Length: 174
Image (tube, rainbow, N blue to C red; front, side, top):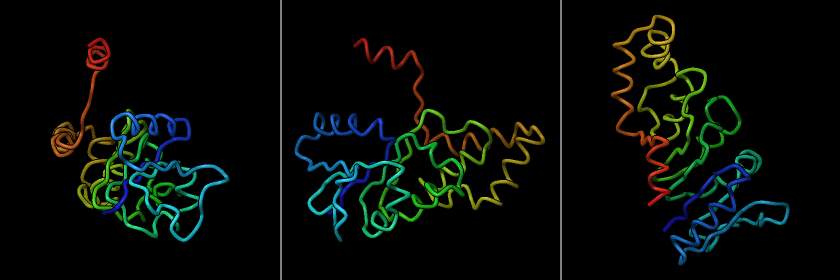
């Protein structure tokens, strides 16, 4: 009863559109991008899937946050790794039943980036930012606490799907 919202880098919009047509051809898919995009009161009327960019997530946050979504999927979700960025703040305003983060790099610089992704996908699961910093970031990053690192790994592992290069190559060969 609500559409799915896919937010991806501009370079991936066509890929999402092709994959939707291939795997779910009966879905009404709308790529909401470009200067000619509908900006009416409900530009997503009739769409089952809306595909847009991080740029429009920020610039059109009010339009995207004005409706409820069934799923919100962030592709290349590292775009929200800084919780104070405009993209992260706009993403947190989206109302949805389910949220997913897709990324090959959930963390590049520090554990706070991982917290930001989880804060979007499962708000509150890792506590608020200051609690996370005290419970995990400081003990792991500053004190080298292996026990605390293992605890965090156990806590997040049920929600992470990792593929190795060998698994990807194997699937491509099959």
